[in-house]
Image (cartoon, rainbow, N blue to C red):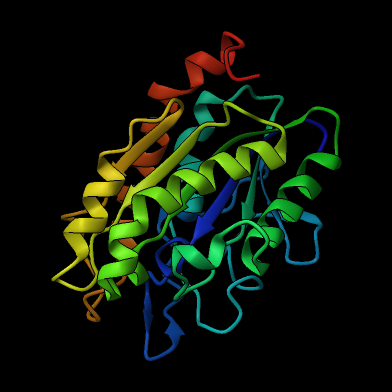
Amino acid sequence: MAKGNIFILSGQSNMSGRGGVKNRQWDGVLPEACRPNPSILRLSGAGAWEPAREPLHFDIDVSKTCGIGPGMPFANFLRPQIPQDSDIGLVPCAEGGTAIIEWERGSRLYSQMVRRAKEAVSSSAAAEIKAVIWFQGESDTLSDEDAGAYRGRMEKLIGDLRSDLGLPSLPFIQVAIASGDEGRVETVREAQLGFDLDGVACVDAKGLPLNEDGLHLSTAAQVALGRLLAETYEKRFLPAIIQGRFD
């Protein structure tokens, strides 16, 4: 990657993508917003840059069947706002079924995310991590303890990641979950929607259509979410980055 705008994609199954997945098979339907673009790259599981194609997480979230997630739509909708001489680099890190405690500093998932983020920028002096996009929390609706602790754990994760990457103001866009245990989902959503940290934004997935399983976002929903994420990044962070505030 000669010159790149890098985005870390992390969280659990709705980030790794289950759009179009039924009976453990992806239907292969590829909306226009998910199609490859020569200037949109993906860091493979082996740590090499390659053209980004769906499913983005096929060699990361290896224990499940991956389909459409929000990453490719996000990149395609954002592409017109990025200088033509720059690439967009996506770094898939999400794994399905993971609670936020499994992402704490020192864990396998956290260490892998930091390692892959550093690999992404080491490929070029002109490559920069522009934001982390985080979609996770459904697993934390399974117990009162985890739901109640979500806000504190999320705040610590953001602080630790910024520290370990040496980017104290790294933009962080999280998605407020659309599904989970009915008794606790609002506790987690309130934590996600109520964050008041500098450089942190939230996009709400509630109301987007789900697959038949009632848990995972459909292909159409992931495309809509990708657009919302791109719009949020553009409005909240792109002007500040251009002005040098997040260097």
